[in-house]
Picture 1 (cartoon, rainbow, N blue to C red):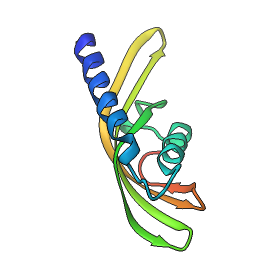
Picture 2: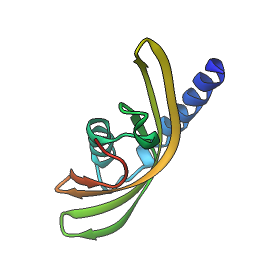
Picture 3: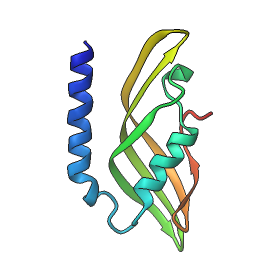
Length: 113
């Protein structure tokens, strides 16, 4: 199971890395800003996964007004942590909406801490 989890994570990250240059080329820095914001605020699994890391796999600007940009992003997330000495692994895919202003994330949909 752990080997399958590792192989799946590696495959997703490889695909994301190959396409990272093509994700939102008209919004330089937006993908990194969204991933960092998610790392500080996002949770998954109805609160079971408190420290997930996100890799954006696809993103689309759905609205832009001046310097305000709304982006729908699909992503892979992974949270490996230890809880009371028991290893717990959370992994999955999701979609969120981000609102950016002047390249900074101002809001994110979905579960947050």
